[in-house]
Length: 276
Length: 258
Image (cartoon, rainbow over all chains, first blue to last red; front, side, top):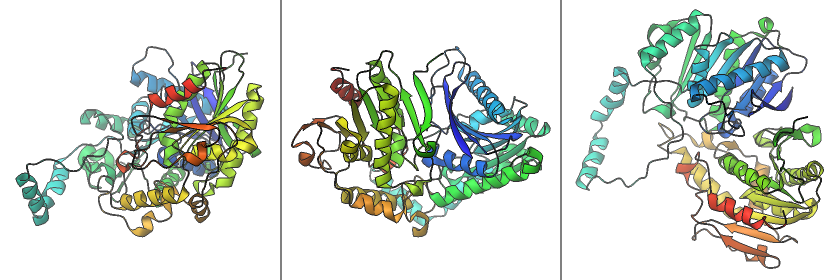
């Protein structure tokens, strides 16, 4: 495997690292999008570890910075952000097609990266698979029951609440600064997108973490959020309650990378993809 | 042939080191090697390093940013990071920068452990000056601070639904595996005073500010930057560190004779 650094794109404004397995021209390439504002190596180097493991399994990869993130500049094209993301990923797919012969692509994104992967996957026929890490989620009735019911019967929590109120209600603990956020999209629209994706043969892997417990708290919530399309055989879901949003612990990260690698191998098998 | 002002490439042994070369518009007389910190501080300062590199290139300096072996986009796993190799990589990067820029005079800049690496590499890399931003000069204190943050991380209710086990967080510092060797190397770190002019940019909280005396006793000085930089605030662990005053301080220092 070798890695090559590229400046590419319609305005040569994008920077990325392609991982190219020796002697292989794979049909399916994997493209990893920025997680929030973190540059292309990903949170705690997640994207480096993921792409190298996929390269070892024979898959060409590209981790790159979208316009204005990381080392990439602006294209100056006057596009909306959504149009820009689609244009950038189009440039990325063309690069991997040129360098590794890829005809189909799996997009991987965490948080805002999942949102961007969703946007492109919903409309680009070259995308044959997507891994959404902490992507779109909605508080459901089930979520609220799971969240609030245990609290109602927790004496310690009531005691804390009453102490807090008696003390004037001020907060003595500053909140963590928000790191990433996924802007909501209408749920029906997201369901229609998922339905369209599997309808045209795409494979989907949704991995949600305990780090988004403010809106998602159980494996059942995939079905509660998105309905019967989650039962489609092309959809795989995984809820990892113990992990945080960005997989800071190396064991959690290794299990995530293994999980994605296994999912890619099962759904885009090397024999069918002419991988090494 | 078109020349990109910012060129990503691989260099060094087995082409395993990632670099980003910022070419100035005119032929440079000096160059700046930007040595990154390690671990999460590398990620937090990436944006600021790019902004500073662009500002320096705009005033006529050639600039190289790079990643050590086992960090960033460079080859190697996080467990491979080794102090001596980091210093060696900085020396290689200085040679690469001289070759690309066609200059001999190279100034080094580094934040935190990047500053320490720049100071440790100063002689071998023939830096003409070192600008170190809150460099780590006492490894014991630094290791203790990281251990404290890692212990707090285990039961950080803002991050985990339930506290994690000791085994889950063991032998790691804030997102990265730490081998026993690197831990010992950093714990034993005592950065010697370099034989070149040194500017220490100090943005540590007053309570945490170490004594820089030994670094600047001969040919150096200390400048204070405000506000303090939240290097050790667990709540801001994944927040980028940006500092306009830092960019002003470094570009101001290097304005003369660019």
